[in-house]
Image (cartoon, rainbow, N blue to C red; front, side, top):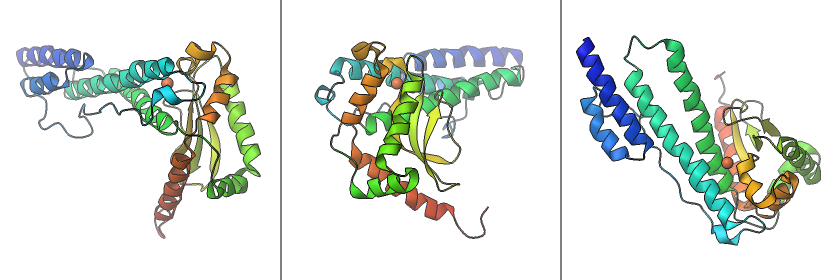
Length: 254
Ligand SMILES: [Fe+2]
């Protein structure tokens, strides 16, 4: 690529990134061919992530305000979707730039990892809110087999949440496809997750999840979270994970 072409490429690509960051995905896509990007952009690089609507009425949660949920959804979740798209577009534009040091490209890949985790975990978190009641018999049986009792599972899950109070992170009840274990996981940030594990129940412990309603009282927020768990979703995720485990364990495949 000549220096003139490269300069044109970078200017155009930067414009595309700015437009993507501002939410003008359609305009960014229009700029892509002019910037020398591969078209159609391969799925691994496509800035095609879309914001998903809340799967429940945010005015009807018990003890978590509509104002907090809307702020969380709009600013933190939707913000991550927009940022992920901007990062992916930038990765595409810099992939062929031989002058860009690999470690700087990796800085963007780190951001790609973080933003992907944020988008997926937020969708799972909102996805397991909006319910009430308690775990059904099958889920209670699975929790009892894994932890000794439902109460012990909940005790540990709550303890992990309390430990993350005042900071950031996630608490995840997850099913590990490799080990076949249902366990609670402490996750320090969006990129901190056990390998080969499917999340079953996700609790956001970043301060933005509760500060507006509860200040520093993180455990009171965890109480409210438990009152609003959509247990049907939790059961369905575990059922899906168990099916995935059966597929995962194909004889002869390591
Ligand atoms: Fe969050």
